[in-house]
Image 1 (cartoon, each protein chain N blue to C red):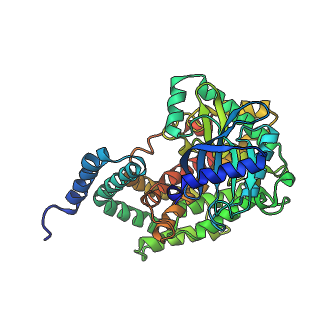
Image 2: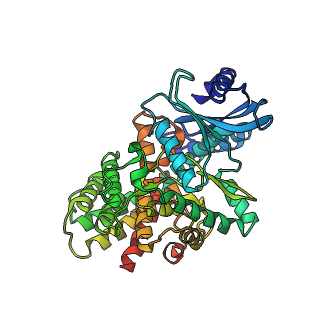
Image 3: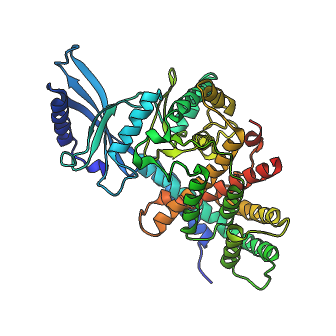
Length: 129
Length: 348
């Protein structure tokens, strides 16, 4: 068993250090890059909490969509879907709509890690200007 | 790179160059370096011209210095040619005074242009617009008129270096081919981008048949704005190419360039109707279906662009923490792309 601080606690500690001790003392490009670094650590912190459940859900959804329950590797599943969407002349009726659903779920899970709240957004502006 | 320049030496060289070009003594003073991306260096300076026939004058100028050959999208001659074409057509751009292709002077080619006032930082523009209800719509109309001017230049009048494909090719096909190649080069599968490319390939817009000059990167961040004058100039002509005018109108309206001010489609500054009104009043022809197609393409283009930035970081071409972070921003464009595809499918 690893000692405290845990991985999550280490990430939180470094984030605090960047924000409270480094940020007030830098400007220009270094300030911008410090903000980026702190944000990346917050992403990492959320990923520790959320990613394994998100990967499991994405794996099941892709296996189901592609009819490939024997394939466990998420990268392989994504590669298959990518190739299919790019190269298949004809897809089964409704396949693209089902793919859209699966991809929107996976995208929502990635947003929850990388940019929470980005999907709270009124789409109407894009459609009816 | 640029911050290591010897400004004292550059001041002397600029003075010598302008004195030779104008045939009277000119001194370059008050040099200030600004950064416009990693590729080129911009230095603001004043040229004192005490024996100007019209009376002693101080010219407010900018010198743009190119990096060594090979690192540029296109060279000093092409960029200044399109700037002059845009100015002649009536678009707001810096006036080009001098072009020097001889690399022996600063070690690199350069051009000297007028210094246009205004601010280009997106957050500052959003603040200006929030402080004055009339400013955003005004900028939108000015941008529409500026696009109409740029697009009046036929592709056949542009220099060879800015032509993409043959002038008989469909611009949508050319853009799809570029994005298809870039998608193949990414470090991981991206089925959302593949779905977008699939839809775009199968739903290409009508094409009138005539390529025009397209800036391709007009957005909040590449325009100079002042609170009293509105749009002062369009910057950064490096990506100029021939194509469909809707590419320009739509790129400006991609959600990313709103910087969180999502309800104002045109760069977070105003509604689409102000842009379109300005465009049509100045003689531009607007097709909403072509606009939607190019907006979806622009969203895909920037999503792939962000992934490419992360690739450059990860493969060591350009190690930089902001480039790394771009890899985790690509999902924002995936989300926007999926929503746009949903709306487009519902509409057809």
